[in-house]
Amino acid sequence: MNNYDEIIEELKTILGVGKKVAERIFNKLVINPAVNAKLSELLSQITEQFSQCPICFSLMKDNQCLFCYNDLRDNTKLCIVTNVFDVFTFEKAKIFNGLYHVLNQEINVKNGITPDKITVKELESRLNDKIINEVIIAVSSTFEGEVTAQYLKNIIEKYHIKVSRLARGIPIGGTLDYIDEATLKQALEGRKDI
Image (tube, rainbow, N blue to C red; front, side):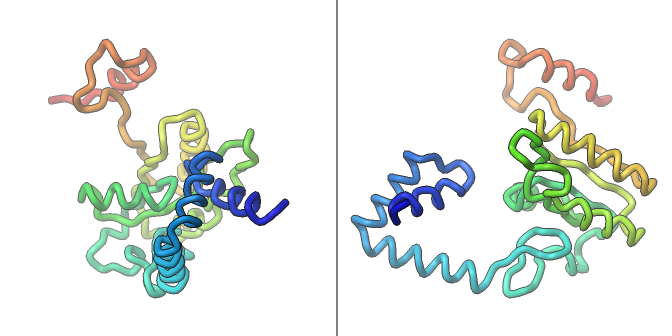
């Protein structure tokens, strides 16, 4: 494998980057050395300043977790998400003030992502501390997300902790004629009194 192929393969390891996008990125970096220099500088900053928290697996800046040791957060509530970007989504919405636990990925046996490849042991260690009294599972509603949620639910229930899942159903602005039957069923079953 020559250098070009190695670079393209490495760029493809980034989620959502396929071969064509990887080739475009490579081309942009080759024809524009200023972009290449800026990107090198930014990548260097990421390596020096940011890392993943060994407790919650969210983002640490300058070796300080943004969530785990924040006295302003409710340490009795834990939201389990798939990746760090999900944490950012919750934080932007300002709808959750508890702690997070990032799985890094969802169970997908077909792709070799078995339960031992997500951060379940670390999650159980946190549950053993007996501080957390509610866990919210906020993974995707894909097949992999459903498998992951059920697996997590079975583990969490052993700790006698309240466990819930984000409601799913009709999105805001969605009309019934564009909603599939499974989503409509979930929306009906998850309905709330108004």
